[in-house]
Length: 193
Picture 1 (cartoon, rainbow, N blue to C red):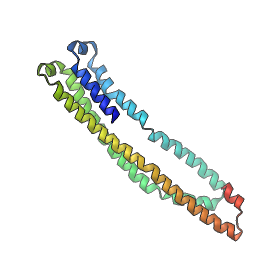
Picture 2: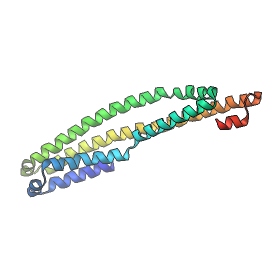
Picture 3: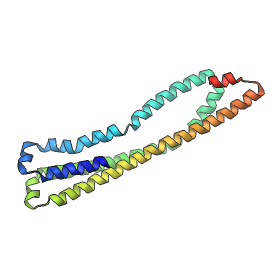
Picture 4: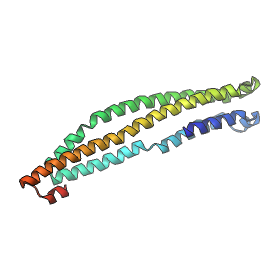
């Protein structure tokens, strides 16, 4: 929300500038500053994909180690965590849809900016700065709502992962407790796992 507000303020400031300003700065540069830089900020703020890659690598290495230590406990772990694939697929599908919506909204906002900057003399001649600023603000807020959906969907991933991890740990602990009670494993074997 902060990014879209700053984007709207910057747009209003640019639009209120005199015509000499638009001669000094080409429309492409203004468009890039208004459209691309906020996108870079959004990408830097959202580290979702980097986290996924890091966690996937960590998970793969740990799974290899636990299969090496105790195949059956690892199989239980892997089977139960495998159930998490279904909700993750649903979330990924939702993210794909939302990202497509975000791309379309960004394209609309870009078109608004390019059209207004190229026709700034007309906008100023008819004193339409306020109307154009309002249109831009509406589009920027729409993009903000879309990115809020992305963040909200991303936020659902971590609690879901924690639930599956907690249930897996409980199942492994119970199974190990039975094996220890029957004398088939020692507490040390369980702790190593």
